[in-house]
Image (cartoon, rainbow over all chains, first blue to last red; front, side):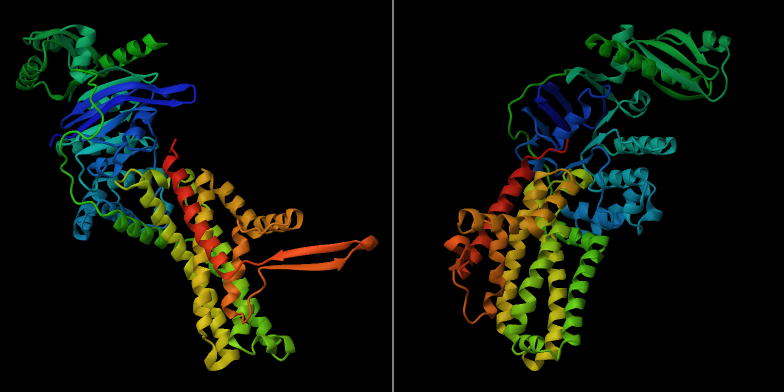
Length: 314
Length: 299
């Protein structure tokens, strides 16, 4: 079954304040979707309704086609989530916390042991397994929470700003973990207000503000929205690239409609066409042996669209 | 890519869910881990210290004054001994245990954010409530049994072979019912607040002296039986040791100033009434607490 998340007319009012206004959003398939929006836009409110922590004033949230509001137990059965920074019973150690989480999900003891070792290694907490969680820093607790959300190898993972509270190294590690999850063929719905994080790990992005969905689209289409049929892609090279190289070897690649230097080792290219055109340009760049180390949709395109859409509501 | 796909509410599509534990299995599982957390906590040590102090003072008094007529009267028979030292002491231990293990049981889930860990799992709120209730009962029982062991040890010294009467078992069962009733009420107050401190304070004030004051006021001012106050029922715990139960209603007339006659009425619950009050409190408060918890949001 294809993993899915769906909000149908999801609305949340706190007194006279409407935190979420008839949100309709359907996400299907194995992918990572970034849920963007400024503070107070309604991101956490949405995710809390997907996990039944708060109740909608109207509408419904579905996980894998099961209504969270009507049957939370079944809806959350194949969903791992991390909302805010949950606290674990302080006297339990990470293994016991995972044991509790796994047992409540119906995992067998030997399965819990095996998966615990895997997920604790993934979040780099193996050496702390016998320490009490109550003694951990916020960042360490967050890692255990991430491990708990992945323990049952769920098809759907809901993450609410998972790198919040972590130091730069921890943030990078969380991004790596999320990237690793994508390879395991699942749907990840991750809220964030860090655009670079979303560009780095997500395939699609949903933007919300004042409780309303402004758009939901793939990252490559985000560039299209700003540049018409062209996609803005940022290239990084292993060594500095000269202007002559930019104009002679990159600008001349079929499909490249423009090139601009970002800094000594980075450049932004405009590619006319969709993903196929991008693929051809990437192949040409690789064949040219220019020392290309990364090729990703430009963050500035998302940033530009983000600010453009947000400013409409102000 | 479409942004909006309105669809009919309810179940849709098929599910590929594995076997989830039943509600009972989940409640027992949760209670086991919650109990483990209690037993390793400072609050558990505090509770044991309270019981040790109460039991220690009692043991000291019995040992030091064992030749006095009062203590000799107390240790003349198992019923006299347990009727005096078990009922009152057990009530105090139960109240402290209820405050310590139940006061923040639900409020703490919101304030300490442990609820975010639990409620993200495929488990019903009622199951979380039941699991935490069971754990609080078990932790409180450890304290009550510790107190009982101290009394039995003293009983073995002063009563010899007859230190374990059947009436003690009956009284223990009633104490257990009182514990359930008290924890039901404590969980209700805990569900009312998202702040552990408020929950513990309100519960402590009410159970340590608030209900007793209200009970006295009701009887003194309006002269009605306070059957709706949980602490009114607690004296039933000592009934198994009594050969004659106290009168349900007793009226004492005393001469007052200016030739007036003052009539004072006191109430004691009947055996059945006491048990009914406890059972009623347990069921109604537990359900009311659950009702609140089901509607409380993790905002």
